[in-house]
Amino acid sequence: MHKLVIATLGCALLVLSACNTVKGVGRDIESVGSAGEKAIKK
Image (cartoon, rainbow, N blue to C red; front, top):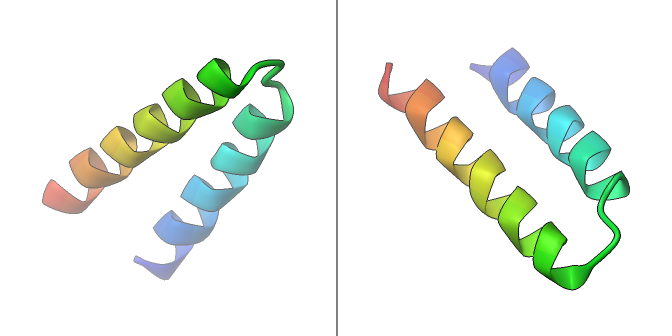
């Protein structure tokens, strides 16, 4: 579980660093949250 959280945060940082707009950041945060929820439910 601990590794999953670290991997998710690492991916989030990479995705957020690639964003150019506030709207893009919001979408990226939402997608990371959805991916985290799916991983936890499995």
